[in-house]
Length: 253
Image (cartoon, rainbow, N blue to C red):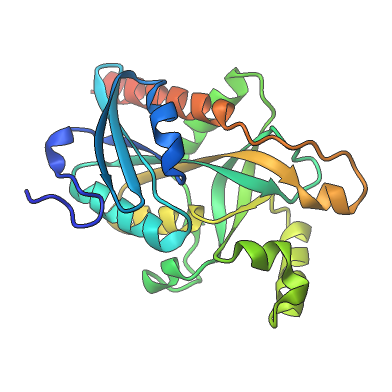
């Protein structure tokens, strides 16, 4: 096949699994947790390395920030043979029990972004694959790190979240924020819902694990609010989840 227009590679990588950070700068670090890691390609926001786990090839590819580039990356990964995708990212906590340094596994996402709405109507839920989600939760807990599983908010505007009062839409943004929290939303990020919807439409499995950087609601309430920008635990959990999924697939065969 020809090389994909955006990600810049074809199907010769032979990988059915992909780990997807947003930041191109994190790709090499993540690939270092795999066996025999090697650089594959760099094109636009998509930096890609290839490694191995349990005898299977595994891709690590950045998606950039937000839904549009995530959706393009997922589409082209699928065309090259990838069928299981795990996003590793960062988030801000919303529920007060969610602390900086904790892990959040998203089992569903609030579709407050625009990309997924060009796939299916907003009434269709953005949900993760249960096998991938269970593997991520098990892997996170095996590290001894507090691991929360639940709904996250997926948005398009970082500053719409952090400075809603200066936005013309501010009143609506703040009212919705309060609603998400009252309904039990755990955290806020920017890519999960596009990943879940596009994967669902394609028939791929997708999951998402996030490192909590901080929790602005805890800060607002005057509670302790530790910060943690180190994604190592999320990386370890994602890699272990891929290992578990490969073993499950081989056992089923």
